[in-house]
Length: 389
Image 1 (cartoon, helix red, strand yellow):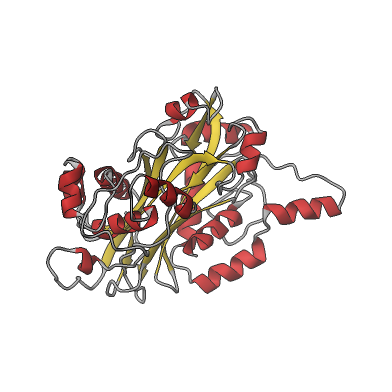
Image 2 (cartoon, helix red, strand yellow):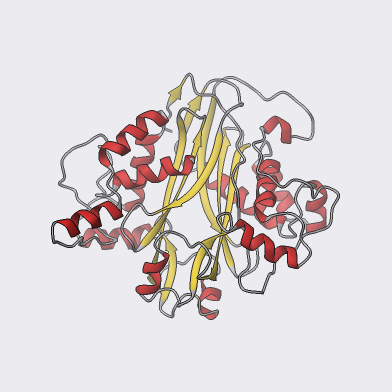
């Protein structure tokens, strides 16, 4: 097991963000249970010690941490959930982050490259795939019409805060209980599908156990876990990047990318329902590149690549982990050229920017990210930096 030791890193529990809810048009399937705890309306950062039932002091000293991310179907068949979790060596969730993606009307904010997905014939006209966090007000207003009084982002944040400090086994046990039982335990959340969200966080934590670890010394006061979308690589996909940081240093990071593939590949949860609803056109599925690593890497190989996409992502993460935000900002400023900047440069030169989703260069000059060969590797570093906010 590979480890890194950052003596000055402060280990913190994170629950962050502003979120957005799960239902488009007028068909809102998200409902709230009426509880006495429906008063939290802002995202809060909560330490693991604060979320435990007993007010005990959080442990200190060196800790081994891992990060993982999965997709799930926590809430009906109109959306899919992406959960990220950080765990320690005792299978305790140190931090968690959830967002959900749903097809909304085109007036809402879509993920990066939404217009290109429609132009390419993957997504129906008048539809965009949107993050519920990014469309928090829009989705929460629809929830309000069904009687909800708490925004979807606040619900997500409360679920994350509750998960921090719990073991994987504890979350799995709760995920198997009824909504009433779970809402009684997670008194600050009101979503009836709270058991489903806890289950996806538990799955992300189990996935984290298979990944490489880092070791930290210190207390748990400052770490924040965040996740965001980005256009790191052309216009045929969108990147989801997550970062655990202490305000000065990136401790752990995670990259995945989602692209429309042929219908024989593995799509995100509820892919069949998206096709039946007419949001994704026949013959296409939206798939994770990590989940479809073999298929996607074979296509890259046909273009001359020798390194799998998942291995590239891992190498970029390893490069980023342990670097200060200032270091990363300087590196991105010196090396990253955005899609818009490349397009403008090509137009100025009278040429065209011919990028493809399978673009990779094994023979380019050596640079700081020696373990990765993707031509857009600095775009992925920028995506991680962007996730910090």
